[in-house]
Image 1: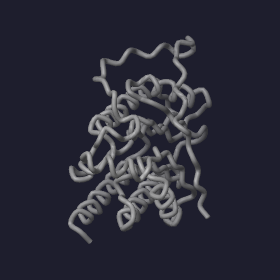
Image 2: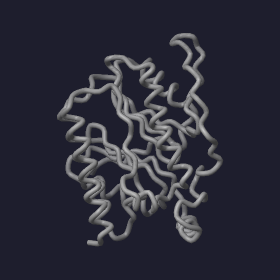
Image 3: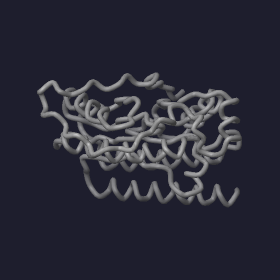
Image 4: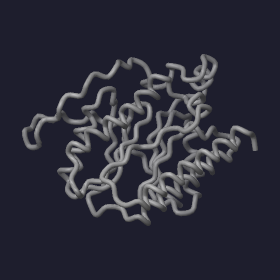
Length: 253
């Protein structure tokens, strides 16, 4: 195993440990999606540097938006990749699920929102700990492969459902989905991937890491201060933009 792979495995272990510690520390109403760890992983990301920065900002600002509307039954995770936002977690009512999506859709530079929030009871400490463990196993399994690049995908797990976000070819996407389905504890795989051609990947690589040729990676603007959200029930919320292709489920077989 190369030194880079060893360092990435160590980073994955640290991330899983931190997530486990947070899970054991008790319920929290809000979680911000974890970003890539380590300077080497950031440097090899297929997103442009602007998209990477936007994703971090979107997660922080999306979390702030949800915090403004949160109640005791709202436990929502905000994860962004290439400006596509995934919402996971639980809420107490269908209206809260819609409000969460509308709030995050208002964040600058969000191009689409995929709302996978479930109406029902919140996750238990056991659920959260198990999800953190599954995420670490999926990342390690992807890292072990010779025919795909692990940092192509961002991995999020919610009650055994694994979400793969990324910029990848159809072959890489199918391969990553197959690997993930084989990880113990995974109930199903949901793909939220910008599918590109092999030629596009080669062109981006030739042009330098973080090339602006990645889908929807250009046109970012500095984020101004956030405008306050309209009061609930006023009808002032803007509908969320349509998801870019939506969630594609790859069931475990």
